[in-house]
Structures are given as C-alpha cells and as structure tokens.
Image 1 (cartoon, each protein chain N blue to C red):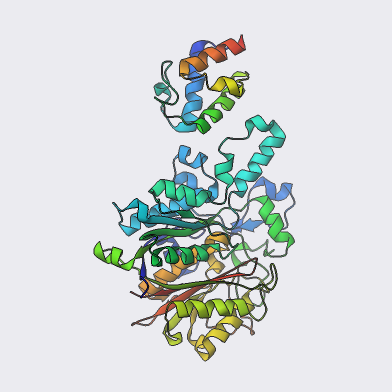
Image 2 (image 1 turned 90 degrees about the vertical axis):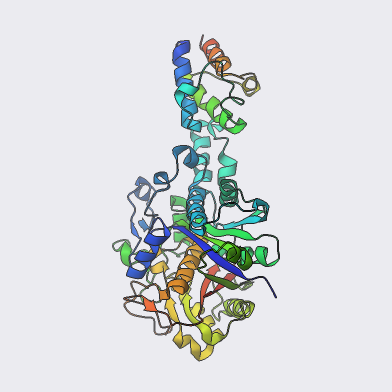
Length: 81
Length: 412
C-alpha cells in the first residue's frame, strides 16, 4: 500500500516520463488539462502506466472524473484499499 | 511559362552521416555504412542476413526523450532531416498557409506496428499505447514534419516503395508549379531494420547474404553483386518558388528542373528487362526540365546491387541518351549508404543537388569487376569533377510495383 505522498511522487514520475514536465510541477491541485496541458492520448498513457505501477484498475469511464492530480491520487488510494 | 522551383535547404540522417555535411564528406571519400547486426533477434529468429546499415547518429541523440517517444523511428528520422533542411534554408517567417509537406515512406511505422502486436499478445489490449495509430500510419512522417514546422498547405505522403522519396520531389514540384504552395518540405524517411522486413526481403532473395563481409556487400554493377543492403534514415529538401527564394536573397543550391513518374505495368516486383517504363520516365523528366541530352553530365543511379535490378537501368539510360550515355559520370551511392527504401530517393536527391552545386560526383565503392553488360562510366576511387557552365544531373528511383521516378537538377 502506497501512501498519498508516494502515489503523488509515482504519478509525477509517470507524468514526467510521458510529457517531460518537471516532477515538482505535478501538484495535487493541478488540472491535467488546464494546468499541465496533457491531452487525452497522453492521459490514457498515464492512466495505463499508473495502473501498472500501483496495481489498480482505473476504468475508462472513471478517467474523465480525474480532473486534477489530487483526484487521481484519491482514486488510486481508494482503489488500493 | 511554369514557375521555376529551386532548392534552398538540405537535410539528412543516414548510415554515412547524421547530417548533410558529414554525409557529403563521406560520400566523396567513399565509406561503407554497413555493419554486422549485434541485436539478439538476428540469432533468435535465425535470420539469413546478419547485417544492415543503421544511421550513424541515433535519433535519441538529437531529439528529446518526449519527442522521440511519440514518433515512430521513421518519423523521428523525418523530423531530424526536415529540421536540418529548414535551418539550412534560412527560412523564418513565411506564410504557413503556402507551405506544404511532401514526405514519403516505403513502409511506414513498422516498428510501432509490430511492437504493438507484441504488447497485445504479451500484455493485452489495455497496454497497447494510445499513440499507436498516429505512430504507425504511413502519413506519420509527413504529419510530424507539418506539425513541427507549421506547414499548412497540405501534408502529403507519396508511397511507391523504393521510388517514394523521388516521387515526393515530383509532388513537391507540382505543388509549387500549380500555385498551391510557395515552399515545400519534400523528402522521405524509412526505419525498417527490424527482423520481419529483413526476413521478408530476404525470402524474396532481394538482400545480399555476404554475412562475413558487410562493408563490401553493397556492390552495384559488380559481377558478384548478390542483393541490396538494408539501410535506414531520411533525406529532406526545401523546394521553393524561384521568385520567393530570390526575393529573400536565399542561397540557391540548384533548380529542380523536372520530374516524372511512370509505371511499368509489367510485373509486381521484377523490373521490365527492357527498361521501357524507366526509359519513359527518363525521357519524360528530361522533357519536363526542357533539358538537352548533351547537358546531362551526372546520374545518381538507383543501382541497388541486385543481380536483376542494375542492368535494366543501364538499358533505359542507353535507350534515352544513345551514345551520350558514355559521357555520363554515374554514381551508385547505395554502395555506401545501403538501400534506404522509401528514403533513398530523397537522400540521393540531396547528393545529386550537392553534386551540381559543388560540381563533384560522389564515389561508388566496392566495384571490383564491373559487369560487362553494364558498361557505364562509374565514378570510383575519387570524386569526379563536373564541368563548368550549364549542367544537368539526374537521380533515378525504381520501386516494387513497377514504379519509376526521375528528378532532374540543373545548376542555378
């Protein structure tokens, strides 16, 4: 079980790998689309990489609800529980 | 009077150099880009061919990690070559709505397609990357170049196997002559040194099997030639309406004076032994360029080093030029680069343009015993100095499917 901090750090790593954004730019209140400029194709890649990293399943219909980095951290934490 | 089209920028990434200056220096010296493959898949699949000609500068050394991961290797090469050509042209602020792309490939995103197939089988559909489609599509390279440089007057992808790169220049010329664009980034890209294309080309007996001596395997016109050597890379040329180039005081390498494309309608892979389609292409391109036969001094030949391919090109040259064929300085640069398939025409066009601009024809290596049935004046040993005054050079490309494409370059 990863802590929220660990999930955030892991997500930041995945986002950096996909987009080149600095990991420290990936903060809980940041919107994936508006703040981080991540398009839907990159978002799907990030989702699939997060599934593998954290051993969870993020259904496609759930992805549209993950507007901010915090939404994703909460969802992953909940799915791991 | 049709608009004249000139060449103002050159770019390339090839097995004999990762940029145009390096490639050209090596092309004049005569080096081989072929080497033994060290990949584990050669032994794993028991491939009958153990060598190829990779680019000298891996794309990962030029592009950022994030740029590279969204592009198939063929599109990576395209972007690298197009950026060099763009920078070389000195173009900056242009009307992007009048700027087109004609970027060819023979095979397209074969690495992406087959990697995705492996992923599907090993990890399931969820792990197939969402970028798979834009990476594997054959227009991926043209689209990537258009996106990178902001070209909005259409991004075109001529596909005609090994004639593709030359056909891209044909298309680029037409786009400018017809008034649809003022500037075209024309070129070709290929990245097919993957076990499946090697197995497939090998099964049709197209590849050399000189496994113990890769550097001497690509030997166009030599009596002991036994097939081509798989290469990879990209070539790019900035084509520009003459008045557009003159207005900005651009450095002009030469005029893209004429082009042509014909089809053999003879056999799906074998060249017409009489070279009739190639002859029609040569004559049509020279007519298109309004070129006099005696002005032609240099030919960058298709000459892939296959037993059946090299001879019909000579037949076509003889049929087109008559006795003047003996005065042509012929360079078979695939002896150095290997065969870049859909990129070959673009890379060879870059060399043809430089041959005109610098008035030296690059060398052909590995020609030890010339096939007596191909009595061309082949440039070997050292570069051939081309004459002063008005001169014309040709580059030929022929592709599976019976595609013939010719470009004609004139000094400016």
